[in-house]
Structures are given as structure tokens and as C-alpha cells.
Image (tube, rainbow, N blue to C red; front, side):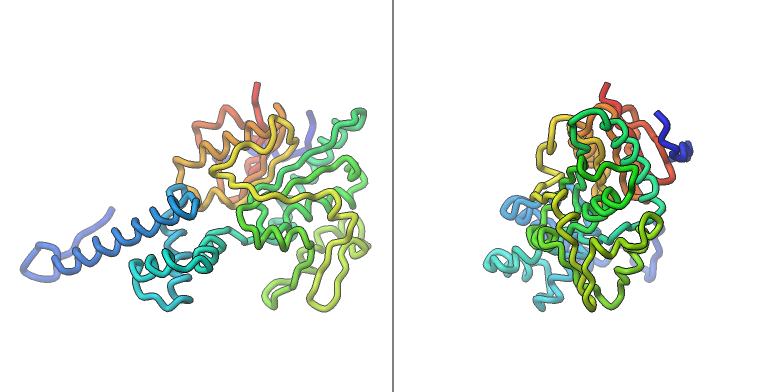
Length: 312
């Protein structure tokens, strides 16, 4: 198989100080810290047990940032006070769960990675050229849908990819994000230039605007782009594989940086069971495959974090 990928083999103390004659810790401060930590743990336990969000899989620092943001918005001063609010306010429960969703996304984020994805899609399209099988892609943890729509745009504009054979599934745990994705309409914030993101497509066709209607700061994906993409709610941590060895490519970028190491393995196993025997996985540039799963995924391009499944 010749993918023209860069097969780079790249490698994927606390100190104490005393401020007084008494070397023992300040008992009041320690008690307060322990109480605060206990309250935080109890809050996470409630979220996991009652709201069905797997807090135990995520880094505490990430969870604390999101909870602290909600505490500021609700003007609660402690974990205990916020927990009391959470127990009684279903709207706040929904708001907290939404805040846990990782919605950092964009069209063609990290363009150099998309050059590698383009080569994968060309390879898979050629492989399916004389069959009636679709080219199936799963965009996992897709946030508001800009990643799966980027895949659809790329397939539509690249003449070496059979766009008619491409089927894309976008999944996320956030229903509001999925609602935006299904509509395919995006408002450009003042800090983001969507034209600049979409300019990645100029290498294929400067007339890509025919697939994206642009009025003021509103961008709407055309029907040709939306028709190959479907969206479903799916919990990548607790959910089952989305297929039995049917996807040619899974794109799951920038989720694992928020997940504790011990829980990356089951997520990657779920992905592996969803791929064809020689399917591809693309993860975030700051992420790596745990050593215990190196045998399941062969490095195809270490710099772009592209792997190929080995289910044999």
C-alpha cells in the first residue's frame, strides 16, 4: 500500500519550606483543604451516579475548570453550595453537562493533518473503486459538526475521492452541539475567521463557495455537503462500538488530552472494534497511543498522528 504518508518513526519533586518555629502543618488550613476536596469528590460522585457523566474518566483539573466556571455563573461560593443547587435545579444540571462537552473545533483544524486525511480518503476511495461498498468515516466527539462537514467538503472537491461513495457519521454527547451540526449553520465569532479556515479548499477548487452560502457572519453548508453526513448522540466512554469492523477511518482528535491514562485504553479498544482490519485512526497532534495498544495500531505518520488498525 502506498499512501505517500510521512512514515516518520518519531517517538510517539515537591519541596517543603517552613515559615515558623512550629514545623507542623497549619491544622485549620489542612482541615479546610480536606473539606474542600471532600466536597469536590462528592460533587463528582453525584454527577457520575445521577447525571450519568463519567467524571472518573476525566482529569480532575479539566473538571474543576468547568465546574468553577459554572460556580461563577451561578454565584455559588463553594462546592457544597453548588452541589446543593445542582441537586435541585434540573436546568443547571443540563448546563453543567453541556459545559463538560469539549466543543473546541473548527473547519480543517491543523491543515497539515488534513493533507494526511486527504491521502487516506484517496487511498480508501481507490480501494473501493470496483466495489459497491461505501467509504465509511466516523468523526467521534465531533462537537458542532465542523469536522465531519470538513470531511464531506474535502471528498466533494477532491477529484480523486468518490464523493458519492462517502458516508460520514458524526457523534457527540452534547445534544445542543448536535442540533447545531444537523442544521449546518454557523455564526462566525469576532475572534475566528471562517473564511480563513475554509481557504484550505482553495488548493482543489477556488469555487468552493458554491457549497457554503455566506451572508455576513453566517455560513450555511449546502445540501450536497450535508447529505453525506448523519449525526447521532454517542458516549465514546460508556458507549458500544458504532459498528462491527465497518469504518475505513475514525477521526477522534483532541479528546484524549482530557482523559486519564487508565481510561484511554477502553476508548481506543472501542474504536479499534469499529474499524476495518486495515482501517485508519487520526488523533490529536498532542496525543499518543498508549504503549499497551501499540500492537493494535501501526504508526503510519507519527507527525500527523495517523495510525492504521491491525485487527489480524
